[in-house]
Image (cartoon, rainbow, N blue to C red; front, side):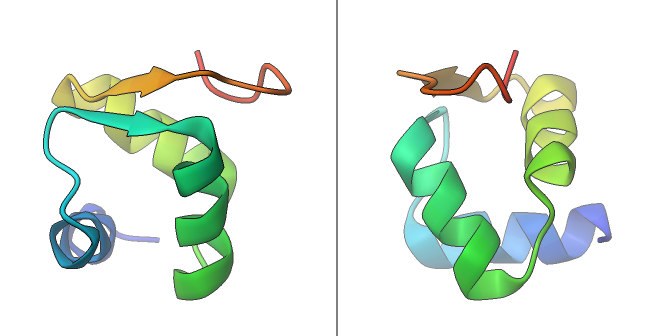
Length: 58
């Protein structure tokens, strides 16, 4: 998934500086974005993932 598509999904969901793990999973399902792609995007763009449940996001 492209960074532009992830950025658009985050913008639509109001995500700017941090995201809860549960929301990351929901965005993954809703927009068809791989969880790993969300993790990589967050790491590159300084978005903190809080409350990770499975260790998928670092």
